[in-house]
Length: 237
Image 1 (cartoon, helix red, strand yellow):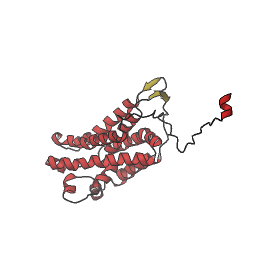
Image 2: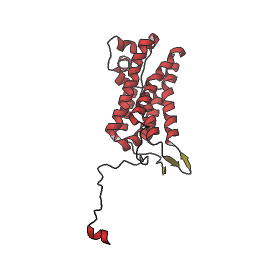
Image 3: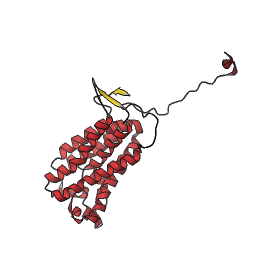
Image 4: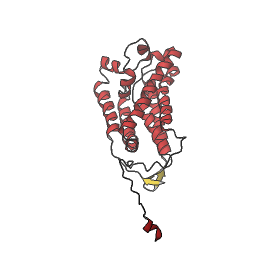
């Protein structure tokens, strides 16, 4: 099935709220020393029983350096991809999926630090797990559709795969630029990978479903289903 993709879809409430939080916190608080440290996940600190809230706050704070580029990437993912999922699922379901995926993603860094002590010294921040989860879910939910860009067609699997790949690798680029050792920097890929798995389990692509509908159109809500009831007189004609 083919459909025409709008250049700029409607920016949905839930997806916009996520982006707004990332923008405000990253741009206004992200470089404020103690405040930035209090928002950033450091596995060693959390395992010592301090700053237990950082697996959540780190989701909305881009680190310095390439933070502006990360904010722009979050804008594109949440506007073009997240808003389409939210239009199909609804805001509550979309937010639950990406936030749970993000939290479990960053929680996995704590488990990894128990096995690889060097990970305790790394800093984890940024909405990459949220963006990866959104891109993977988008690719799986709309896998049977075909997007038309003028005279060209593109599968949502390709678009979602590209977005997920870029969001997954971006934290490692940031870590390397910040001076993290190559032998340990790979650990920042784990939260995004875990978020991708959570999104896949949430969508359950192995289950048979009815046609998902066209991307870019909202799923009908509270639609009244009409049924024609035939009388015996109708059946005789």
